Length: 272
Image (cartoon, rainbow, N blue to C red; front, side, top):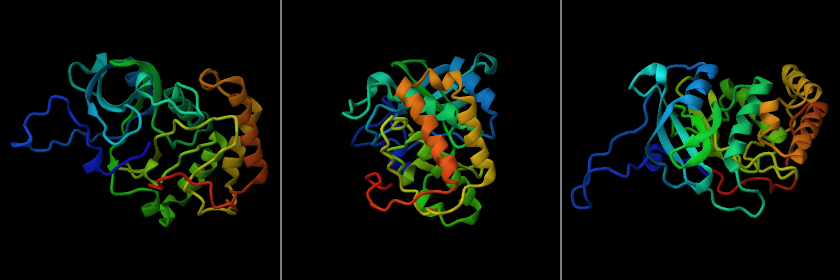
């Protein structure tokens, strides 16, 4: 589950013109857009019409770039999304089927915390069956965690993401899963390998070990443990996973700082 550069990640259309002898001129399938309210994005992603533009190559599971047209927008595509149908998932020995539901759970967790790290993501029927549809974020694909980690402007967001990965138990936070959006924000994608009840964090974000968490982040985590998981989030997890989220949130809040990895082994592969 890795993210590639534009040249590697351009969606491939099944109807692209041209032959090996006369290759077609490459066409960038990704469209730019302005800022979008989360509630609007969720409405459109949930109820809009989906048209597959092509499959994203070099992904372990079937992943499609799609146009999403909402009834209120007429015939013009309103936004783009990334569609991951359940039937396109490769079986894993350490996670049950239905990884797409964890993509949506990741969004629900960040939405409940109010941390704004993950693009709006919904579960719905699509052209290849039920799956997740996540808002596509226009971004600079030359940037990733290792190119932005030393920028003081991103320190707060990266520390927030490091804390989120602990609470969500992310087992696959590669550098390429951190996007530098055209909106100036950092976004975390490819969050399917999260929420296992057994602690198995693997992440590249260890540079902030020992840094104190901001008081507002600690307060957000304490509010989560006091209020419990939202219904939308709880419905996407099993009972053991729900309890584990709250246990980890309580532990991170009680610590008040980001931990280190003394083993040096809690990293994904590849790193980017």
